[in-house]
Length: 195
Image (tube, rainbow, N blue to C red; front, side, top):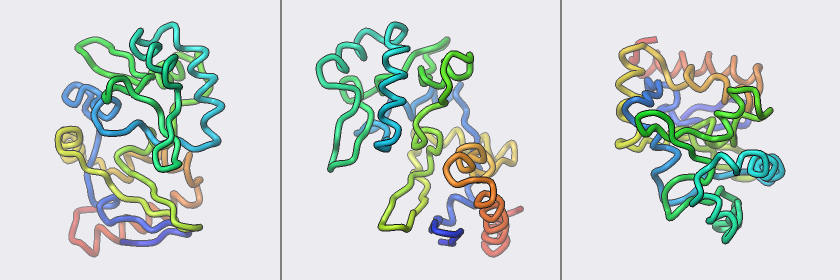
């Protein structure tokens, strides 16, 4: 573990090589799991706005689920996006070859929405746990989802810490990210991982 400002970070975040390979994982992080994406209370209004704008292009089953159970559910008092039948996030759409994509991110990429997606989704496979003023960043490695991304990261020489640059800057800012990059290089040097 290493520390950057108020964050305690698992060494895996510095040492793992990672680059999403949608052709192999098929967007499984939007589909597989026992819970919906964690969201913050501040994100709920923009998620409601996204739902209102995009629900006409989302899956009919997602519209049914949100109509019956709501867009957000609370598990242990923490809000998360609802899922359809214990599987896909309600914002999932499917593209060519059955690749699951985030409907919000698709609209953002097309210039139709001004927000990319929930921060927890943007940071995946890094998960953030808050304890008081301290935040802990850990890699949530799910072999059936992440093994192809690790293989592609190794082939391309891309570290998880670099792959998540935009998401980490969004979460913590440029100054934090620059300190984080330096700390990651130090961790890799200490553990013998090629920098």
